[in-house]
Image 1: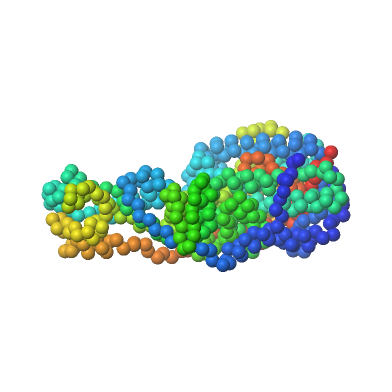
Image 2 (image 1 turned 135 degrees about the vertical axis):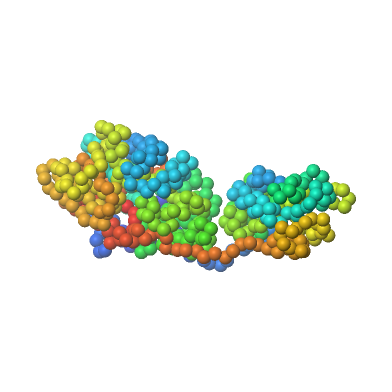
Length: 237
Length: 385
């Protein structure tokens, strides 16, 4: 047989689908997760979109250049971070090396996105009851990945640095977390920021830098309209 | 290949309207016409249409591979230089394509002759893939046609496969020009297929597509458009304000940019040059002097023309046929004239569909003139030995 076995003939069905899309709103779930990555690769390994990972890294790098504390001596810098972890910058001062980035994903996913993600993860058991659901980390990664791909405003990224805490244990965290835990970076010299209070600089820098922007329209279709009246008014054949 | 007059199904108009096939009649003129059908033998279908379609499609793919590597050839096709890289990249990265149609002059004997390629924005898809299929099924069911009648038409099945292979898991937007019912019929049908394989589909009018300051294409609610099927020719897009934003955007376009090469009639001389003497090809070359009269036995076609506009031909015995139109600003080609076969008062054209990379079926159109226009009628066909 040289023809299809079955063809769905009703074009009206696609119109119905479109209308049902505007119907009762679907159940949604809030999703928030913080990741601490040392590299873009590590981020991609968690199934997050690679472009989000590299963008998050670049954002952290730019922030690092702006807010990393600056020290006159290697010893002062090492004391606030980790020995051997500070490097000379182009002005002859010492700054900690970027240790990675903290990516905070925050947003909403719909029930159908959860269902679709489950279908992609064989054997995943998402128990969605009550107001939330618990999932495997693979499923969470997939959901967050989808959320990040469809809405680029749903994540923030900050630089993280290696440090030693009071008890001598090594850690890795953002400057803001260090400040909330009592760190002051008192020996750093923040002259190049022109700020007398370094912790204030940090607080203001962590605000989301997303800027509302204008969208332009009508940039497609003008050439075909100019030809309309011929060929049925469309630009197809 | 025979044209057989038959009784129309008495309820076909109601059926068409219930299904959402609203352009069965265009400007009070019939478009869907089942007062007759075309009957082919299986041999005619397989040897004379299906195999040549596959073969020509392969030649086309080879040709694209050559053209993207040559600025000289891209220039010959009147593609603006700022888009060379985008076209080349889309091909080298293997951006997938969905469909195309080649139009043949064929009368049942001898080789079908390729008149042109519609590889970027072909329409008449729903009527070929679905409505004509429904006509055969119902006519058999009602005892109007023999049970063993078949049709060269797995377009729908192959489209499902093509969409499934894309492995798209983000919203897929389908865009057509405002106010074109016929174009929307094509995109609505494609949406239907996409939804059936689990793709979330949305419609947007081409004029409504937005571009953010960050260079991202968005819908009317400023939501990102990850995948976009645009029933809007690349040759237009190249000259529109948003064209320059495509290469840097993160939207996947269907058909991909490399299709610009195949939707352009300038490709016909190249196809001939690289495959000279192929039985399914017509001699063609660039028209260096479009001011001159068309020679006997040749057709003049603009690079970018649709629905027969600006086509001029002179038959072997000196009859000149000409269609006016707006496509006067691009180069022209001259193509050897292969007259459409005449059945009764009508001239018949065969549109042969390629889905993914496979020959998938045909649609037959008739016009009252040697040049097939948007006023043509679509007739069903069947295979019966």
